[in-house]
Image 1 (cartoon, rainbow, N blue to C red):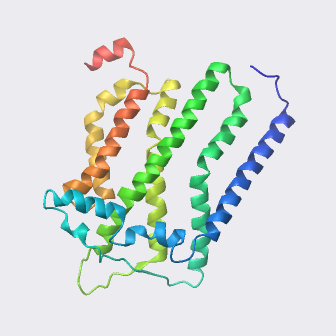
Image 2: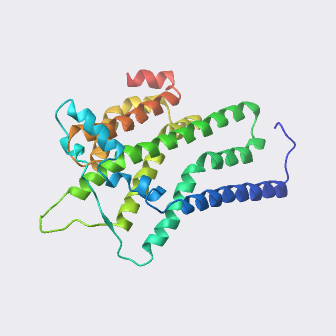
Image 3: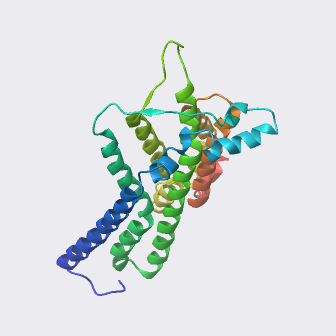
Length: 272
């Protein structure tokens, strides 16, 4: 160890302050988001409701790309709108509170990871500190990339398809605020977690539970599974929207393979 060993009570005191600083950061950011959530140009209307309007950046980008190939013209409809309804008295207030908290959690994620790093740092050797520092940084970056892909690609594609799908013209489509927010938070955070796959693979490799031969052996299976997963996330059926979800997911698979240890020589020979 590089420092004098801490007693149990010292560890408990350090944990208490770590939790205090983390909760304080969450509360401060949540209060800030709560204050700026409402209004025509507030966070909720400008950011969270963005995918409900035809001028959303993703739709405009798809329209521009599709115009070169004369496809996906429906994304050029700037009059596209999805109206949300609220059927419970307190839903809007609780949505205001929970959305502020979740956005605070996302934005303070790097600081929370720093607090975790600072708490475990005294127990690590010097070479371990360098590795863990890099792991926390990489995991944070990948989490934000996953959330961004969830917000700009996965959620808008899923929303646009499901909100315009009709099994019968006799059924009026009305999207509730609860349903919208559940899908919004779920898809974005799921993508953030999925993008931690390279980090999880690296940790399993460090523990000796995973090596590169696994990825070589199951690559074809992974392609099929990821295609199915991409089709479930974006069930519109056109190749373009399928590809914009499948390509990042498959890239994660290959990136995970890059970060794990090579297979032992005798195992690698047997898989050739």
